[in-house]
Image (cartoon, rainbow, N blue to C red; front, side):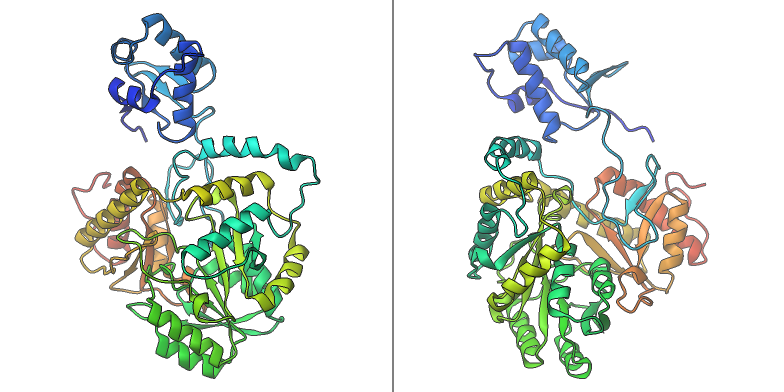
Length: 483
């Protein structure tokens, strides 16, 4: 698929670069400045730089200086000359393929180089400026290189930074209650081994995030489902299930539930925690989506504020970047020591550099920027309107946060729809992927909106045509790419 070249104006590039460094050769300052913008995601792969003549007039440098800087960028792999477009920036070697969030679909997303739109993944891209944060972390790394590098419970500075985030959210937390893990799933695995014996019963809302359920079952835990209501967590159903199943633990997603996107208020959190305590059930609260609000930051406190039996799982994957591969456990004080021992039985700690990066991100408040939230909000509303208009029988509530829409289909054809859409180049996760009972939810499909608008725009007509085929209608005419 050939995409139109993005163009960066000379005035915009001059503003982004800021003032020149008088202590460096002008060509080197200009080349390194553009390279930094590319590395930090502020100038995207495939963007055409302004012509040398336009940049000379805007930035106040000589034509020779600008030409040498552009040549330096090409020599270092950060730009290429393209006929008709001029100098076009690039990530050296091109953007790496893959990197999507694996779900239990029988594989790990599209094959490298495959021309598909992958809507099985619900995760944002890295924040702008992440490469610069890595550079800052590299300056801190020498302080740790003198030692052996093992920090099985996490760097003390990171545990302190995570504890401060809970304090700011209204939950007093000691750094000793924090255990750093290699992502949220590693946290679920550690907690399950610490509080659940093989063969124990656990409860989870259905639908739910499938990888967490799989992690529990891998430990031999028997996971029973309780349906989530159309408007969110059904506390009456949970109360009844806790009494009838008598689970040792329950997986809870009160914050922009994946995949439904619902948010539970403080009164509901308090009641849920009270029901868990009444039945002697440990709450395992997944807070991976807590920071993914889109319309307004919710006035809610962590569910652990209402019970000292709740274990909280956090992650940097959705709030910052999945490539950090960092998560954490906030343990009740009586469980902290036991969780620490279990953590060390799984692995000996997360990478030091990434922990330094996350510490910096947490301390500076960097996460989803206003620009990123605005883009996600716009994608959510656009996708809701586009699919709703093309497929009037489809229904989805407008979530206040999260990364996906959860569609109720007019017929139980979710798996067939996913198979048909894949033939058209769009990968979807059918509702059954999220069913705790390993079946059902055929009337539901999840459509993430974290991809760029161009990719979403290419996916919509494919999904509409696929639904028409599996639902027994003739393909729509007039759609781009209609056979």
